[in-house]
Length: 329
Image 1 (cartoon, helix red, strand yellow):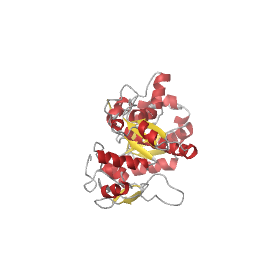
Image 2 (cartoon, rainbow, N blue to C red):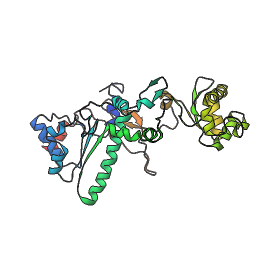
Image 3 (cartoon, rainbow, N blue to C red):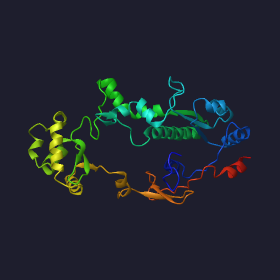
């Protein structure tokens, strides 16, 4: 794994493998390849993310599998589309953040930056999951499976649609502006007296009037001067930012947050990961791992009044080798 921070286990492994069984196979070995083929014969879905062409060379390409199992749903996850010019390039999350232009609009004006979590990996997984669910519904009607594919590049390109549309039809891509919005003001981070930071978002003139009067103590800004509408505020954002920072700097974070809440102004405190860990809205659940119980965020979706879904344990690598080999022998 990439780390061993969770009681000697990888954080990625613990997060992604709850509720699964684990078997270790060498598909270049004839016996293991036959075992995998037997598993696929009884499966609804087969997902693989080997290098382009590797699954097919091993006898597990989508075309061959679907010919043998017409109701099977296959999903190939790749770095780049297998029919594209970059199909043979290695693709890791930060590389795809760079290739898709995401890094160019992320970070400070001085330098591009990486999104702090593996968004390209996650985007591809979510798109693949969505497509598999659609294929399952379709199979319930037609009885036919499907051959699906999803690349990290395509997954993030979809999430880059708005910046791309700005470039293709507006002539300009969004600029890197740090923790602020490029075309709405004020929509940025401002420091408070005790060293904290708060992001505020003014979305309409009604909110601006409340913010000007109740937070900035300048009610006339709603009707006169250089800040009466969003276009004017964006044009004069440097001076506006200075004035807001000056006002926020008079209050500690808790006090300013209370004022914003009372005024009905949208805001978010710039928390650290430690702040998330102690956040009152963070729901947690406990899962079992080979090294003992671990707390992780609870599944985001809730099912009515049933409470949080129960999550199965995290296996050790190869924990179910004997069980699965016995089942499919």
